[in-house]
Every structure is written in C-alpha cells, then in structure tokens.
Length: 588
Image 1: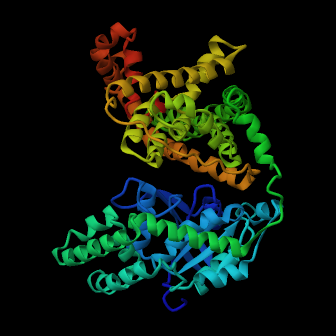
Image 2 (image 1 turned 180 degrees about the vertical axis):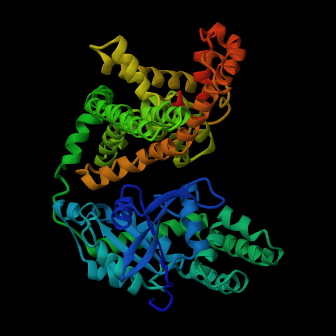
C-alpha cells in the first residue's frame, strides 16, 4: 500500500447515518476543512486535511447511506465518488452497537475494489451495552484492517489513519453468491475488465446482472458495450429462471446472509435481550403518541427562550464594542490625522455601522446553532421527525421531510439543500417549496428587536409564536400543494431510523455551531461589507447633498415607492430598505 500512496493521499470516509463518521472527520481535520459540491453534482461533500506521518492527507466525508444500490442521491454519490476518484483508501465507519446492519454497506464498498479499512466506532457504547466484538477474527474474515475507535473522545483515530494508509488491503474477501451467480460473474468480469478496466470489474459485473439502471445507462453510451449488456441480460434471465426471483433480490439475500454470519461469529451479546435500555425508556416519553408533540414544541420553545435570553448580554457587548468603542477609536484617529470627512463617514457610518450592525446578531446565531446541535447530536432530532411523522403524512410526506424544515430555522438555503436526503423527486420538491416559509436565522434578530420593543415582558414567547406561525403556513401550503401540483403522485413510505441517545461531545457541538455560523461571518465580511459601502455611496451622492431624500438612493427609492404604497410602504425609506434585501436580508 505504501508504494501507491501519493504525496497527498486521498482518503474517503463512508458509513451509515449516525455511525459517527462526521465526528471522526471533524476530529481528524479540525479547522482544516470546507464544504463544497462535488463537480457536476448537487450534493455537498465535506473535505479537509489531516496530518499523517509528517505529510498532509486529504479526507472526504461522503454522504451517509445504508447501501450503494443508487436508489437515492446519497447512494449514487458515495458509489460514484469511490469509482471515479479512485481514493487511495476507503475507511468504512461502522457503529459497533449495531455491527450487523453496518456491515451490509461495508461488504458493498469492499466490492468496489478500493483499499479499505474498517473503523469500529462507538466502542465505548457497545461495551457499556454488553456487546463484545472479536476484532482480530473480524479482521481475518474481512481481510482488511479493523480498528476500534471512539470518535467523540478521539480514541484510536491516529491508529486508524496509520493502519488505513499503511495496511489497507486492495483485495479483501468477497461474498460468495452461489454457484450460478459466481459462474455468471466469472463470465462477465473479464469482459468488463477489458472494456472498462480492472477497477471494480467484479462489482460492475454484479450490477449488470442486477439490472442496475445507472450502470446500464453508463455502459449504453458506448456501442462497444452492447454485446456485454446482451450477455448480462441473458445470464440474468437464466439465473432468475433457476431461482424464480430477481437477481437483485438474490444478491441482497446472499449479502444479508454473509453479513449475518459474520456478525454471529464475531459479536457476543452479554446483555439480556429483555433488558430495557436508557434509550427505550426515554423513547417511551419523547416518542409517545400523545406526549411526543407537546414535548417537541416545549423543547423548541426552550430553544428560542435560551436563544433570546442567553445571547442578549453578548449582543449588547458586541454592539458597544463595534458601534461605540471601535467607532469612537476610528473617529479619534482619523480626526487626529485630519482625514477628509468623506473617509470618516465611509468608515464609521458606512462600514462599521453596516457590518457592525449585522455582527451584533452573531451571538444569537451561535446560541441557536449550539442548541440545535445538542438536539441533533443527542439523537433527539430523529425523534422529532418521528413525532412529526403523523402531521407530515397529512401532507403526503413523512417525518424525514421535517428535518429540512428544521434546518430552515437556521438558514433556508441549507434547508433546501437538505431536501436531497429525501428518497423521491416529489418529496424533494414539496419540502423545498415549504422551506422558505420557515423563519430563518436572518429574521430572528428582527423578531427579537421588535418583540423586545413591543412586548418587553413576553418577547421570547412572541418570537416562538412567530416560528409556530411559519410552521403553520408551511403546513397549509403543503396541503395546497398536495391537492394541486402533486395531486396525481402517490404518497411515499419510509422507515425512519431512531439512533440511540448519546451524550453530545463539546468539541462536536462547537464544531457544528461554528460550521453553520461561519457562513454568516463570511457573508458579513464580503457581501454585507460591499453592500454597506454601496448604500453609503448612494446615500452621499451627488457630492455635497444635504438631505438624503435628494441622494441617488433617495431619488431611486422615491421613484418606486408608489408601487409599494398599497402595502403600507409608500415612503422612500421603507422602499429603499426592502431593495437592499435583494442582496442579503441582513442588510435591511
């Protein structure tokens, strides 16, 4: 393996949702990471750098998925990234508390042919639950390095990276699909290797036999592949005639059998199966058919009360620091230097007043994102989706669609991007149309200011009520969409996973909080800064204008003000403020 690792090894992390993959990624990369779209795709892929043996390693955090069958966008992205980018190592992150389910994805990734290592994450939780795993036996059975880790405590991560890069096996053990299937695979594999290349030749042969639409469509682009496709169809029909079932189901059945056998050999459960876990007892309450909904709304109300109250002192401090101390210092320095009045006005009234007026809201966002990170990392957010499932079914959706709506509380843009996790186009479109009705974090400071001004004794409850109003409007719009735009499409079914409750790690909470908030800071340093300078210039031109109503900004706003008069915005000040919102809501 050491011979094929380049100066900058590429390592991908793959695994089931809630297996702790992103926790390991964050621990290894720290602040050396960014989130961007994989070229040609609409799914965000996190990448970063880690240090190994004195060199930098590129880490990519693939979307969490349960299989590589490409029935969802995440599955397709995970599979295609490994096939097309050909990473030096693929690290499979498995939840040690539920090894059997996690191994199903693992055996599929092994078939892709990339050098692979397995991280048995959350080993502390598995041991506390009475689960013992024979790591050395599992390593021999799979033919790859297996490393126990506790991502939240950063235990075993250095050993994981070292073994993954130095010892990952390029030819691990594979599933035996039975005589007829193996003969068909052996027939197709040499042709696949000749026409496409040896990488993942076995995997591609299996997918052709399964009738995988994405693989077949890719192969159909070349006329030279047509004989191979015909051969695959013929072999698949012969196998189905023997077993009386689809090849895809036969393959899945063999994989499940292989995984079940692996788990049975290496896992010993010392806890009684009748023992009720802490997760079971908590779920009896928070996932209750009657109590679940009031508890959810109570927790959300608590989040907004904490956001409004806990951030208030910091908002005041930032306001005094930026608009008081810093503005006074800049004024004193420029005055002492006899700087021109326009420069003083630009820096104090334009840049500091504009950007500073936005940065005072940063504490509000930090507290909000921290609270949402606690709910997510603890495992409660999945319960919130479960509790909301009945309500979402009224819209023809399921509980998982509620997750993008909750993300929309922070920002509508990632909320809409989060709809990519939904299984079908109908759900993605409906949920995406509902997300903008959720009150995003950019509106929260405005809510707080007006609620504190007009309802000083009940500001937090008023803010919570506005959020509830947004949810109600989203529900009403969903009902309308179901009966109009999507009246002819069938409702979707989905089984939602409820991960066990876990104590959130402070480092993970702070990482999630900052990752969501840094976009706001970046916007303040770029878009809002530029917009503030442009607005200042328009308010002060022509040179020497005394009344801002006569400035370029005032004249332009006055010209269009009559259009907004029926809405109550007939003055130029209100119209001009609304126009700046086209750049960013925070500028308003």
